[in-house]
Figure 1 (tube, helix red, strand yellow):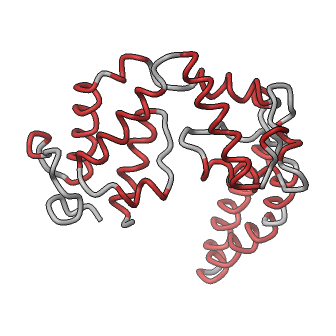
Figure 2 (cartoon, rainbow, N blue to C red):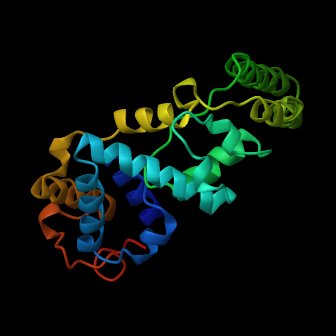
Length: 224
């Protein structure tokens, strides 16, 4: 997908609180295709009980697909981290997101991460200012060297990342995802089409009323 298509997918995901995996995204070729996919996703999630079932079975399938986890091991009281095996949480979380059709919350990082990275940016800015006062080359090099010195913090932060407390068990995971899903009103077909059409029009830079359900993304809207 091109940048415009990626941007459109991200906008739709943010607006409806869903995730569109690469597989289905590659099959979406017209505005109508995107509308039908989004409508199907939000209508499946309209009922609260159905939502919980969709999330639970979606998680179980994703764990099997990504990590070959035995479906029988995915129970409501199972700690999510145990299902990752020896995999680092930040990598497992990312792989899981790619397999799921709904958005995951961010991982929980140590408290020192925010201040440390803020300090790295402040130090880089300060070194740039001092460097430019001395010499142009120094002004370019010093911030780079400062940021380079902070690079080891990235793998350290990832190594200490943990699954969010609200998602520590499968039960909590399901409840958290369901709580962050879109409101029932968004399952109305007309409302979904109106929103999808506006998002497509904004991305293509065309009037919303020019977007029809048979409008092709590449050929008609230049979104590729």
